[in-house]
Length: 135
Image (cartoon, rainbow, N blue to C red; front, side, top):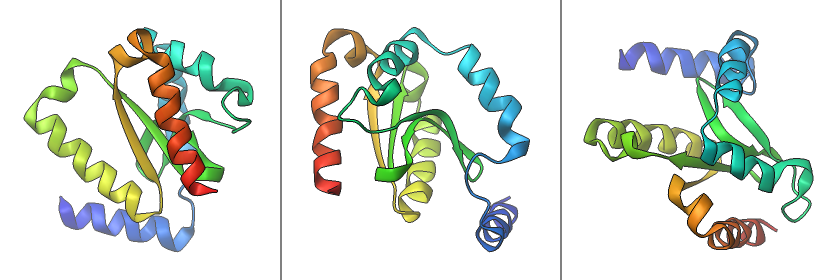
């Protein structure tokens, strides 16, 4: 399986078709339609350039992966994690995914869903810290 993934990534790099691949459009659309309450709430904070004038996209695909939120101009990805991400196998999968995205120059920020509701200012401040380092 690793060999097939490596081949797939080489194919993507050669074809430079990394972002919002057509074949993933139905999946991206489905994910948008059934977003969690945390995702919907964070989207309200990010959409329409509400956070420091930066354009974020929701359910943005990069290669085979679909990021919850992405600011392509700043190469920033934001992921919201619920309870399933506490499982060891899910953590391993997330680490592999993050390493791949970071190898493309992206910074990946992960937050537990609860931060969206309990401390949205902390969440926005953490995002701003990364944005300010990029400029």
